[in-house]
Amino acid sequence: MLRLAPEVYTQIVGHCLRGLPDEACGLIGGDPAGTVAAKCYPTHNEAASAKLYTVPGKEFLHADRDAEARGMAIIGVFHSHTHTDAYPSATDVAQAPDPGWHYVLVSLRDTQPVLRSYRIVDGRIDEEPVIVDPPAGPEGSVPGAAQ
Amino acid sequence: MPVEVRLPTVLRPHAGGQSTVSANGGTIGEVLNDLVANYPAMAGQVLTEDGTLHRFVNVYVDDDDVRYLEQLDTKVSDGATVSILPAVAGG
Image (cartoon, rainbow over all chains, first blue to last red):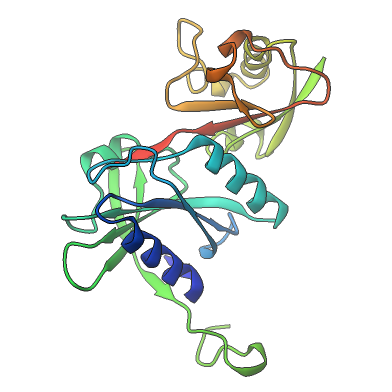
């Protein structure tokens, strides 16, 4: 399961929309022992392509350092598919760098963006539920959220 | 001299869960060979069988990608931090 802080969800989708007509990508920071994505690190797509993405190494380096400074780790990557489903492609599976990561796909094929998340381990794709936490209410309360 | 080597999450299980380890060497090649000597489970994941940098791995000395410097011959000075990160790409 992947829980997204509400601002992380909007940052991921917004970054993907802004990347059109190319694929967009970025990294996700969170507690490596948990399942909560607490920070979004949008990056450039070094491939600058509608079919491929590459996170620039130096941007990964800076995101990794920032996450560490916050007591977090990079726990996943997101990228968009401009014309296909929010499902990992053969390229995504072949190049998945870390079996512990969450792989978030955003499809921009239709009018409404579709966000899904997966685990990719030894070539096997398993979709996982995504929960977007509600925004905090007054005084930092989170109405209706699980504690 | 010993340098600090920051490991990506995918390699940390091979180092007992540590995110940062120490390795010896005056060049990146020496540091990475020492790393693999100390943590043999990392063999093949950072350097290929013929001793070159794996193409799905990026190595930095502080902020500099060693592929744009002297590759494995890049010198590592006192106090520098070596960071190993996987290439992140797909389609």
